[in-house]
Image (tube, rainbow, N blue to C red; front, side):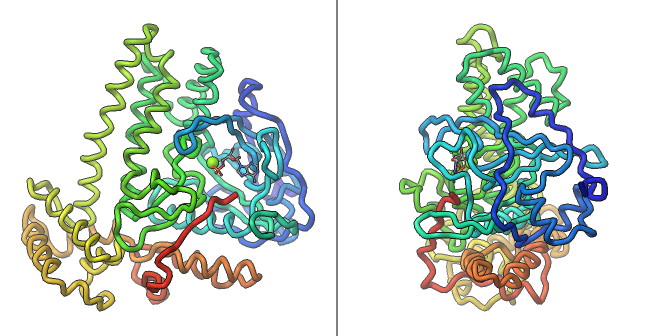
Length: 486
Ligand code: AMP
Ligand code: MG
């Protein structure tokens, strides 16, 4: 029903993969679904039209109480290193409804998160709470507008059921849209089964779906590894650019499509400190801001291990090739990171002293507890928020050096400002603002949530609405902590 008008076009290739990869399962219906938020812009991008669907039916559709025609729902099996320890996992509270293929032939996974127990639930209830699902909605959509590759959020529906965590919370289901839900952990799951034919199936499936340009390659496994290394470097450089801290970079939370996935205890850094960690469970700072590149490399090494048997029939040779490939990470990351920082500072071309100039600014920010985002806002516009830390002598000396460097390579204020404005956001989802709107939403007051989402749609534009969202949290908030969204 309804699907002809909506435009769903499901083609469920993953459900045709070997039985061991999946479990066929439907979302478990919920008591009284009520739509909290719906992303009409994203629906339009998917070629879906919900304009004539009443809220009541939207609530049923995005809670799993009414199944979209053509969907073949499954839970996906995967494994993963969680904080360094290998575990068998799988979709324990999510169901993949299928792959929707849009009119321009783009394929999107449509997944319900919080949809009830599956064979992979272990001791969990398969459910999710409203706060964390709205948080994923806000932050994933903000990341999209910040031009960071990411999964997206189509809807959040309250289930009308309680979920029991430390407190009793309102249950909710998020509809997540992704290029795919293939993870490093999917490869780990298949590799550990020691079945080369299944592994080849997964590699071929991935290449067909995401990287058809390497379909004919002589050594598909190594080329897949090379592609993923570069995509993940691009991704983590983007995170570093906007001050995003993922918080739980386990291998099951690293996507093979190069999108940011699984928004749990993630948050944006305010005061610049490379060791920033928000997640309450990351006591050792494994996933701290500045560790993110080396963890990305570590995760990619786990990915490479899965592919060894396909890289070369001689194990030693395969390990040698894989190691050399993984070690290309460092140089490439360094180059991409420094170029990204050059962009943030409006610098064209290269100068030998660029690295020192960049590090000196970051060191100054760290020592002086400067706000990461707002320091770049200040460099783009000296009238921006009169913060007296920018009168600091060391900062002024640094600024002189920067101004000198700006004069190189035919730079002009128009050129450098336009470059800076394209990469330095004016607004990010600041932790205190996110918490504020989540609290209101929990009490059924949705306008603050909707306003924040709207502001975050245009993070690079100066607007009247942005101003209220640019200030860091008051000092009393400094011990901000995030919790896993379970
Ligand atoms: P995450 O921390 O969201 O990446 O989840 C890690 C693993 O725990 C995945 O296999 C999830 O499916 C599973 N999981 C998380 N929360 C729940 C829950 N409430 N019920 C069942 N499984 C869960
Ligand atoms: Mg996960």
